[in-house]
Length: 427
Image (cartoon, rainbow, N blue to C red; front, side, top):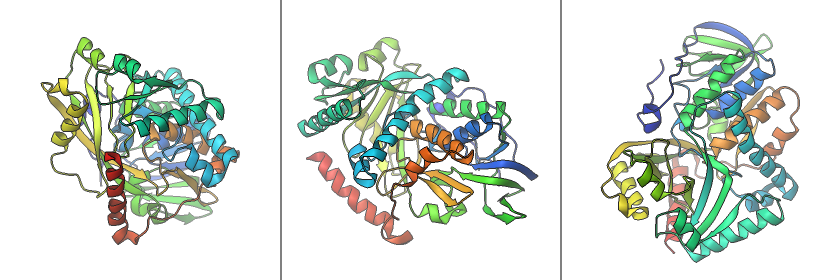
């Protein structure tokens, strides 16, 4: 069982040169073993290594091979469930603490990019746009709440006239703009994090899937196809790809397929005419469209979601059709890349952090907000492992249930629920 090649994508074709890390062979001892080489795992390894702990990171494929290296790459505040739902789940005080941590995550991301000189095309600015008056009213209520109750004033409303000066689409009636959010090249960002972790002494192994873990001589032992890691503490950060390594965790997340296309380079003038401020954009639908410009003036557009777990036929063609519904002026623009991947969602769309045992931690369930949240989660997990768990433990108080229907029926049940949300998008 060796490392797989990266799934072809625009990000892979424009990735910075990166090390190919060896597969684990034999036995290695460390303070902490981190499983998963996405943003969550790489951030955890970095923040632990910065503290002087000895760290081994195991990645089954290549660093950034999964969602971290394939995503829409929008750096957003908050969590996917939203603050109102989070307040109902854990109360206003703890919901506010989590909000503050996500905002800290935005600043942390910029600090890491600067400190470690990560070349990942970071661009400030994100717009959320409404298609219907109901959605515009929801955005206005959210902005009022963030201003008045959370003291978060960087976000502001965009009325239709101003939005049309920024976004060359007649599809939207208004939206919000937040310069504190942004977008980046996710694979290069992840590769930058692991390089930073290695610079502090973390040992990185690719093609080294964590198969099982157990106890041996008072330590946790993690086995791989050709070796084992003996550690004092274990951090499980494999998310959607962890699978049978931790079945108890797999029952509380489900994989969702997402799909993105990239046009050929449009040139600076034509690209800037589409999105004048070059901000990332998402719409307000449950089955949402999201898009942004790349550093080399392409439009990257995502808009398909598969809750069936299967890659639907004609992904590139169908996603291009959604793109043209937003930007019909791109009818002559060829699609040069099309790719997909899986992210993990929880039933309540809130992140799922915790412990399986006192020395075995996990991070999962980012539900589409992993670009920022996974990075700061790694910092919180490093704090907890080092003995200061207060901030990590706020997240562990979020209640999580297994998806209904068991392994056989939970995906069909989710598909039925999503059919209702698709209908709501059309109303």
